[in-house]
Length: 421
Image 1 (cartoon, rainbow, N blue to C red):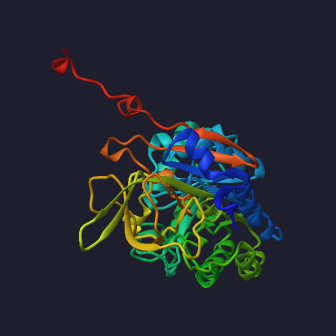
Image 2: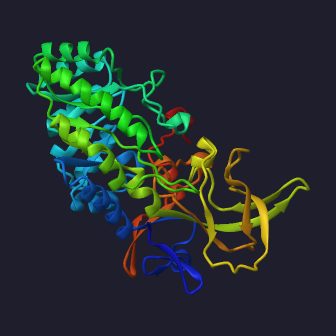
Image 3: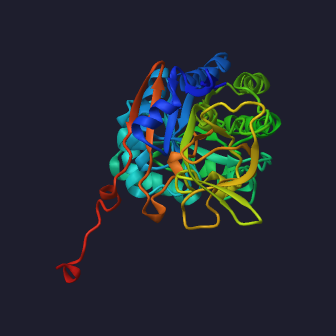
């Protein structure tokens, strides 16, 4: 469910006409519904109310400070993968004791930052990282609380680039080898074992892969406890999918019904890391039609948003529904078009061979399901300023990130002395 609906013939976000925002700040821009964000977080919190839990929002999906502040006030923790994301989470007021730190390439300065702050735990990906944590904690006279990320070799049945739980993926430690890594961790003086972590992928639209992975990990936790290790947390990652087109992913309550018996059986606090499922359908990208173009082979609809603003179609061949801001009538003519942007790449498209209501120059379009991995993966490619972000609450809207200017593009750049003058 989300709060982008047609009312009186035009698209609204909650109580605000999308057209009104576009007229005042220009396009392109991302637009988020605060009510949808809260509703989606509460869906997870309520679904898993039967078990002790920490719901750590995955910042990689969208790390805007206003979104983090809103979710933090709802009770969310943070799943982070960099020092920058840690900085953002803390600045938004998220409790360090609700922050988990994943990722295969944590730098020494990032490790020290997280140790100083006192996060809940590091999700460790390798033996080298484990030793680096022990060294850093020892020098700081601290203790690194850790979970090892185990790889259960479960196929999440999603896009290959966002599958993370198979043997060939770079993430985690094969579950068959994980016991020896836990034994290594137990031998280190400045590491405290507190949990087990796994995450099998993103945009998963079936319950069964979650169940299959959890069965393996719960059995492994029992093995660890039998070996005398005090496992307090089971971090099952995130990955629950959303509807982009015709997918029918399980709701949080359906996922909870399927896995809560296993969670109760292992006697651990659940750590859950939803990102896309919270923010994905809570945001849209609004763009304007610039031109029409025909080549004889194709019809192109050229818009002012490009792959630098939303890279998912180019990167994953991902589908995003595209709706006119003015509601089309059933009898309106349609065209089959490629919706493309201004970027100097043939891979710059938002949709290919899309049957759409006919639109004219200057019309506004909404690229749906843009809240996750939209702005967070955007770039300044072709020296394009990154777009504005706007949040709606009821009948009000707020610019939560100003559109970049040309001067922002060169911020931090310096001309060497020998080129000056």
